[in-house]
Length: 63
Image (cartoon, rainbow, N blue to C red; front, side, top):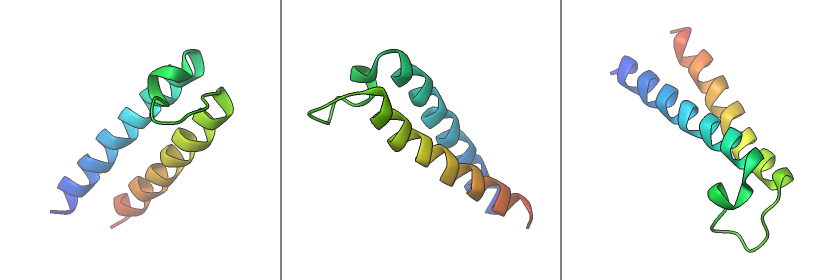
């Protein structure tokens, strides 16, 4: 069960990292749900998601 959670976090991390990289080139592709789109918001939204998921991956890897 723990391995499934770890795989889910890894896949979600890779998707958010891909969205972060894509959003640095074209913010409209990943921030379509906001009224104002800029690269700083991409870093705030997807960068924080990446960091949280990275900490969760390392946290669950220790068990």
